[in-house]
Length: 511
Image (cartoon, rainbow, N blue to C red; front, side):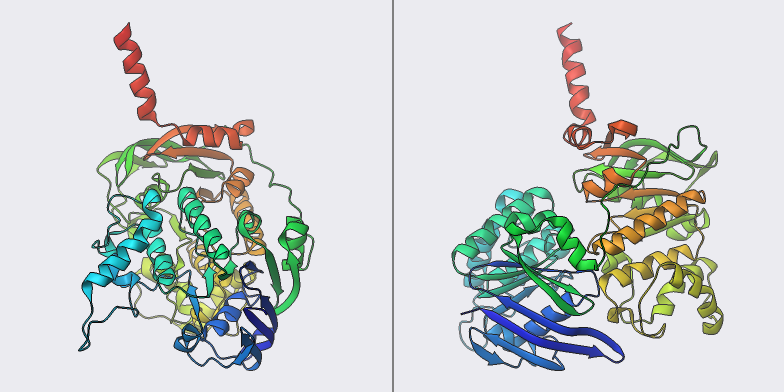
């Protein structure tokens, strides 16, 4: 008997079809991946299964019994829980309080049994003890945690309820390699216990590492159900987008000899230690290495969003001080983040307002003509192939890929010279990624320079002209040309300048 069965489910939002023909079968004790481009219907299907959204048509059965969920609490009562990509934690509560949120042990008279709450919290925290910092304690306030550890709390919050069916929606997007490995070990144990797991990811390697089966959706319809062990990655991609996408890498540009548009000398502060480099006109300069080694900190510092302690930044031979985002924008900088909820879109505001936000902010405009700006944004909308019902629609009605296109479009409207990209492809599908790569190439041809951090080593190696490898806030090596390889990247990523200095000092001492 299947743990879950979804048949011919449909969902429309006004004139937009989010799910045209959703069909899905989840067996007991399996890890089942939902694959598809953004806007294909994956998230809508999961929201229907979890009770967050009511379908317009179709049937759902849980362990052989037909159900009609109208709210999330009803699906939870059936043993279904969801770990969403967007966190649902309360920043001012502790780790233990968040883990047990809405599941607090009572001791009568409406009071919470704090001892049992802490005991259960401690038990759950130990699941990730080997891959977290010493600050990851049950009494730590959530707002003090970095993004990766907040994501772990979100996972533990669901696991603490001991559900029968778990949906993980991009649950690994903020985690580093060791955390992902520990998380997958937990999933394997859950599978052995007979738990059924639905997994959404855009990292194909994860499908083959822990997946049993995969259902592919395209344009709101289920187009195939496959055994992971029996299908090649290229075939899954072909099913997802409906066309045969080539795997050839972008041809690298040779930027040697071109003028420097930016020079950074001995920049320190906010995880950075004496960082020095230059950016050439019309090149893609990538920031590589393990996650959280200072790449994002550098981009935020260059955009004036966080202060630096020391160092020099030169733009066109002139020393500049980037003390705020507005000043950085005035010097031709733009900042595109993959963290849409924090640094990207205003979800409940119209698409048009989101697109013109940077233009109006830089110009210090408080009033504007919607008609005038509508005409100005349309070329960018067409350039990015954005899909939406109306510019008046709220951004939260868009798929993740189209939300990211809104962020990109907003900055293209400012006509920047240097674009800072902080993991911009996080959580978007293969087809949208290819569109972004093409856009990056076309911008470089026009002389725009891009400083790009990516958590996906494969895309970084395939599309960067140069790679600065970071470790512990330092640049350990610069890779260019034939040296942009996995071996050179990982070799440099696990080595720090401090280690080299210690070896040198030790050698001098012996002499």
